[in-house]
Image (cartoon, rainbow, N blue to C red; front, side, top):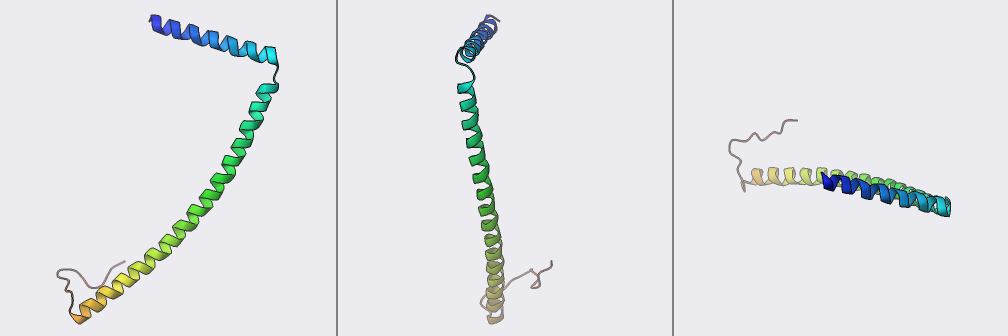
Length: 97
């Protein structure tokens, strides 16, 4: 219980010091900090859009490659079955959707 009271008193003191600092120096430093954080926010937004577009392009390319690879695998397996290299037991040769 005493720890909670002590922590709340410390927070009140820190808040008082911050308010006194703001009143003493004016709002120029606070405005400067706000402008810098706004610039950082814009940069983060721009970069996140760019990264999102890049990841969408990569995803599309991977899906295309995946389809090509699956088609190639199916072709190789069919050829191997025709030549008697491999046998599938208990599996339908035709794939369903």
